[in-house]
Amino acid sequence: MDVVSHWLWGTLVTRKRVHWKVSGPMSVLPDLVAFVPSAIYSFATGMERTGVDETTTTAEFPSIAWNMYQLSHSIVISGVLMLVTMAFLIRHPHHRLTSFITSPSSRPFTLAFLIWLPWFVHILVDIPTHTLRFFPTPVLYPLSDAMFDGVRWSHPVIWFSNLALLTGLWGFVLYRERKSNHPNPQVSQ
Image 1 (cartoon, rainbow, N blue to C red):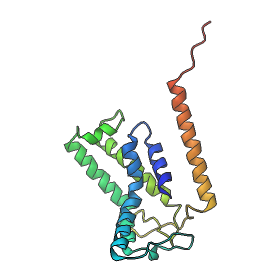
Image 2 (tube, one colour):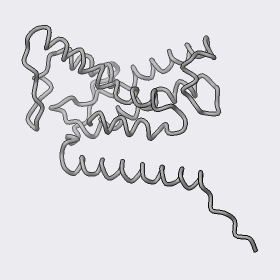
Image 3 (cartoon, rainbow, N blue to C red):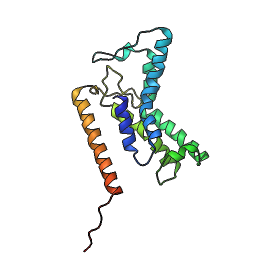
Image 4 (cartoon, rainbow, N blue to C red):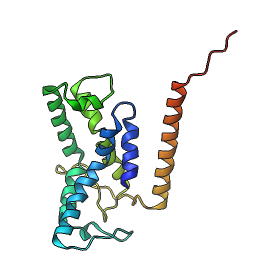
């Protein structure tokens, strides 16, 4: 999935609960964690940048890309990091990070879950939109090597479905917000 779509999904699922300055970056970080080190490694070693098309495979990237991808696209590892965030919020309940959460709950688990929700959604969206040949999502890494052979997100059916879902859901959410902010005046009898 492309970073713009991930950003839009992440900010959508946490709309009105987590400020976009947190949810947006959290929704694209799994890919940045996986591919920025790879790009730096390629640049530092003089490797040519890997072009991506329908025939590109994971093996064409430096091995650091796959190693980091496994870490950043695992619900298991993300869940552990969410628990670390919860422990941090228990120790520091008034940390500046909590100012980005607009949820009425101040429970550390809820706050940590909301912070990590865009990351989890990124992983869940990637499961059906990656093939076994090109960065399959290792959702249960390191507990299991199980991966799903999906359809590349660039396939027209997936791409247009994603566009339609994002457009429709964002349109609905923005319409509802606008409607609730500008209620119809009461008709007097």
